Amino acid sequence: MKKIIFILGLLVFLPLAAQEEERSQLEFSEYLSIVKKYHPLVKQAGLVVDEANFKLMKARGAFDPKIEADFSEKEFKATEYYQLFNSAFKIPTYYGLEFNAKYEENYGKYLNPQNTVPDEGLYSAGVSLDVTNGIFLSERMAALKQAKLYRQQSQVKKDLLAAEVLYEASTAYFNWFAAYEALSLYQTFLGNAQFRLESVKTEFQAGDKPAVDTLEAKITYEKRQLELQQAQLDFYKASLKISNYLWAQDNIPLEITSEVIPNKELFEEVNEMWLENELTAIENFQDNPKIKYLEYEVGMQEVERRLSANKLLPNLELNYNFLSSEPEEWQGINTADYKFGFNFSLPLFLRKERSALQLAKIEVENLKYELINTNQKILNQLRSIQNEITSFRQQRFQMSGLVTNYETLVSAERRKFELGDSSLFLVNNRENSLINARLKEIEIIMKYLKSQAELLKITTQF
Image (cartoon, rainbow, N blue to C red):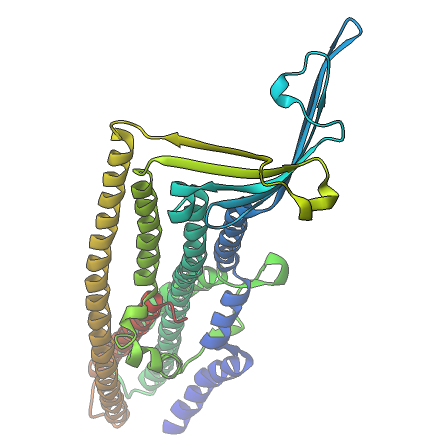
């Protein structure tokens, strides 16, 4: 009788083992590298940096040299009233000083006297200076400072966006792993239930077991079938979800097939991959990307505050140009020939400027308070997650020992049942306890893995 039971056991378990050997494992590290390289949302995060680079280029464009030309003429009833031509080459600098070279050629019967120039035209070279809005801070200087800060901030933003995608991708893999482990568990115990049902039927036919045992074995077998069907459905759904994060080159989506399974030693793989980040997360707390992001935000708003303060000053622009009709003889320039001017303006009440400054100050204070709150919030998050990781790691090892003990009890109870010293009810009860313990172990592993992934998301160290 025992030989028959042993042979039936082999027939049940050998197909499962053969099927397992035909499958290939997708390592978590390999999966994560595919997501980093090909996922569209990770690529999209990189566009943030490109956008910042172009914004910086745009801000620098305010300091580009430029060529200007202006031409106008009037002719009426065969009389040329006037013809005016002005051209200039200007080189702006960072501190409001602008170098320029100009040429004028004007003539006509009704030419405005102030536009009268020598027949060869009039050349000039000089500088203009926006005193208050150039030396201290101007609109274009502020735009350039903010664009530089934004470019630095964009790299942090890219990391934050990518970390969010990688966190979700990691969670999908962990759910896939848990679904596979539950599926394997129910497959094993369905095999056990089928094996026991066939054994009990054989022993009943031989007169060694009562008929009620065949009913109980059949009920257990059918219950395990239902549990396996649900596990298969969960695994199928998890496989589809993980496929959302698998892409190939040229944005070609991939799909997980039934021949691919997760890494069975996922706990050990993740523990080894992310241990260093776990140890240094609080130590490198001030380098946290969310904090850096807000610091750049404060920096950009501080530039805006300084610009608003600068606008309280009166507006004063100066310009001076040497004049000559013979540009080839610059060494003989007559300093008595020049063109000078200034522009001055000051609002009497400065209500617009003062209110803009106060609003900018309030915005800076708001961001600083937010930064202080975020600092403390992230620090507490890191401490909480590290405690979770430590606790789940200990729980996992304790639960692993508990599962081993349950396996020993199940094995002993089966042996006693074979010898006639136990009942089918006790064997099923022991197996149910083992199933629950194993599912609890999978749940603890999942909590541990998700805590590690959450820590990676906060520190963007994926």
